[in-house]
Length: 445
Ligand code: ATP
Ligand code: MG
Image (cartoon, rainbow, N blue to C red; front, side):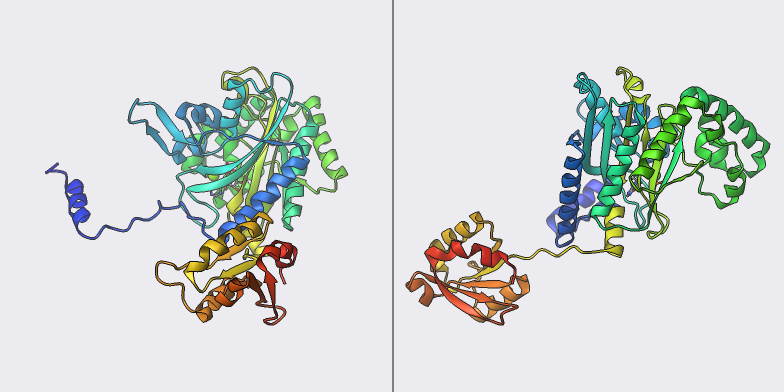
């Protein structure tokens, strides 16, 4: 203990004023009123998912590290440098905070044999963790919505998943989001392309940065999505995977395009859109905006027919996407914002604490009728004058005040006072009839 300076410091600060603690860098608190925007988004998502018959799946936030090493891929940025991994102190198990949730969903589907009676359409929402450099649109704890269709091989389900994103973005009144598509074909087709790609990059070895040189052997496909400006031109002319696709793969890709077009979704093929992992096949796609700076990818996904086998399950075709909700909300904020800040319907003004046993049951009845009621509180320090309570009522944004004054209560009445439109119009009501007022209070005068 003695020769541990940080323990000694901790012991000292324990007796003096405790040090303030802050959140982990890159991990954000979501506070009111902003949290209401999240709830608004989550409601829109749940409603939209139901219309496509996607069902909610909730898997643990912590998974065995091996799941991501295999399921996300050893040569990805995520596994190479972004995972929060640790050994369980009690039994030494290697664990990781999920950096994405497709592997978790696939693991759960295998573990519970979810596809035994046919395909399953699933979605999840929740925090993901990646140790990245925090910046706008890039955090260490962020939130993803994901949809996964398990056990479906056909191109119509690839299209369906994109239509789902398209509809959801329409629900959020988002504009100027473009859809980029590519096809990765099947492993044999990629093998041929990979050989051509390596040869091409070797011919241009002088232009490869350190990252690219390392990837040349491990994951050459990933070089195609380099962000290094010095490599753009060279990469532009690299052999395209599309020209290595056979008839079946091309047909799959064309059907996806045709179905999107039939539904009025415009798209463009981006031959450099890749996922550098062998379990991916056929369609890959991204939804991108130019209005959020460098972090413009809102949603990315694709078909991952090989993943189940890689995780020890039966071969199961599957396709899905993941969406960054911080980025989506940022775009909502910059574009539309038809979101209304929450406020209570009514603020209960209670000048005398002795009235509370009479008042609270009335508030309970109002809430049971669906009215949003904020009770004036302050018993410990004194409830305050009527005037100061009216100030609080105003600040709450409530359109109505319910005044439970001594005069009113003596006659089992309450005064309903309009605080905004209606300019202070007020009406005395019997307490027993207050619940009848619910529709008026909720009309948000
Ligand atoms: P990027 O190229 O932006 O690093 P990615 O390829 O790592 O994205 P995916 O793993 O496909 O992203 O995750 C899907 C979506 O999740 C992204 O399109 C993005 O909207 C969001 N996302 C990914 N990483 C972060 C992060 N660190 N902070 C906030 N959102 C993120
Ligand atoms: Mg990333």
